Image (cartoon, rainbow, N blue to C red; front, top):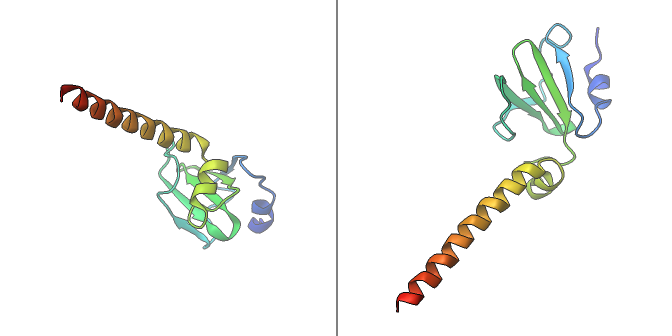
Length: 113
């Protein structure tokens, strides 16, 4: 029988490991469904195990699991910086566009006065 805790403890931060459903048919009970995570092409669902900072994607015939450095539920900013910098970059980019548009509109309206 596979010792899942030993396998999961060996997953380093930010390294994706693939496990077949034959190898791990069901995730341990610590994994709960989540919407926090980047959607992946072909995934059916995603799960998080908060006690081990693990994030699992279900692809039907296999799992893809990685360990986050920070738990997004308890440390959301740190998680964005350390584990999801692309998401943080997108948030900052959209914020900059919105702020730029607001400043442009402000100056444009003041010119008319």
